Amino acid sequence: MKEEKIIVPANGYLMLFVFLIIFFGSIISAIATQSPEFIMIIPIAIIIAPGFIMVQPNGSRVLLLFGKYVGTVKKNGFYWVNPFYTKKKISLRASNFDSERLKVNDKLGNPIMISTILVWRVKNTYKAAFDVDNYENFVRVQTDAAVRKLASMYPYDNFADEGVDEDITLRSSVNEVSTALEKEIDERLSIAGIEVLEARIGYLAYAQEIANAMLKRQQATAIVAARHKIVEGAVSMVEMAIEQLNKKEVVNLDEERKAAMVSNLMVVLCGDKDASPVLNTGTLSH
Image (cartoon, rainbow, N blue to C red; front, side, top):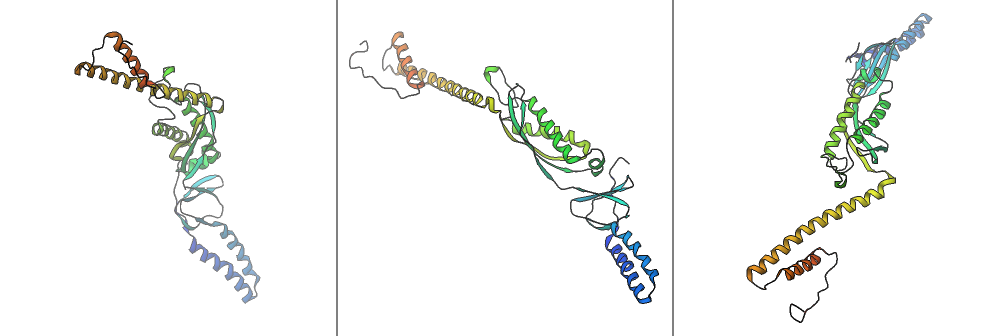
């Protein structure tokens, strides 16, 4: 037997009625007839008693007879089985697992802290009970291993100065990374009959020893990008100003004065602080 076998045992209420009749009937008969032979029937009731099982919704019982797998009871209800069966309870409910924060290296070798939130449940009770030693511990260990592998496959973020231009990063590609993580964990847990319902990164940050340096790096990258946009806009505005002045013939500028105007406009448009105007009350040359 290598696969899960679903069985439906005998009705527990009927066997409970039989148990009560045998147990109390033998006692009443022994008292009424003053015959101790009826007491000998009580052990039969005692043997019957361990066979009662109750299966709650989204619960199961794996049954074994002297080490041989008999079947799994998944339908909720009150049942009676062979008293010599070993009855192992396995929950079929969805469970949450919030892993510890692991220190791993991303694709670029940067140390990061990462954790995952996993939603899982048992799908195959035979594999969960017999193919692994402890399926709950198996989930924890394999999830940590999958997270370590995933972190090494992608960079934390893109950095232009390193020539890194990855389409998928741990920080920005949440859906893609979660899909890859879910697939990786599902492949690892399938051996234990575990179904992965959802896998998401719960925590992601640079390790403490490089966190400050990486924060400054991100800020510098953002400043450079902002400056780039400002310069592009300033050049466009200067071109438009010169074009309009020439078109409307407001003033005739030679190349030297045009260069001076361009320089002044670029300083005004690209500067961090407001410009302080200087009034010229003389001619253009002085």
